[in-house]
Length: 224
Image (cartoon, rainbow, N blue to C red):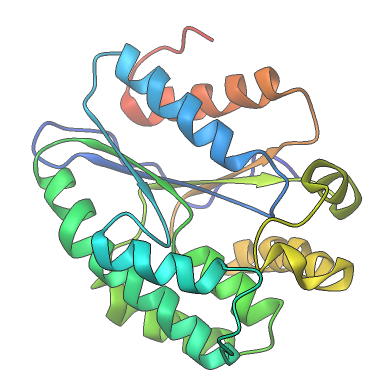
């Protein structure tokens, strides 16, 4: 199941850059691996632009705070939640991702459109096709050249998370089971290159797998 891929992976070039996203269920170690990956790419001599979705811009950071505040009294419907994520992403693409790619940078993004499709679609119940359509508008059709999905069983993820830290983590065991299965379902028709990485191992092993995949995309030999 792991190490699946759709189509061929874009190679980095000075005038196009490379867009990488890391995604997967909460508890997979994604944010730590994003930081490790960015540091490793820089060590290979590339310029890295590091992003997070939602967030990454002045507007996006305000939206992120609203979306993830666990004890906020503001009620957010699932439809409004989805559109807020899309708004943050639209600003991120315009303000950060496209300019970085045009400058030839390697963009490493902590989540992207796939997360919206899974969390509000497959797990939340909104129509998945509608989410993809809205996402195409929000991003101007921009998809990562390679998406790395860190897969971890729900029971392992729950132990790693411990006390929920935000609104989404607090949604309960059944919701997060749907999230995990949603990622696996979404990848069957994912319209861009991807790798499914087994994250139920030591973090150093996960990092090595990620580096090997990204080294191929960068056209270099991994030192991992």
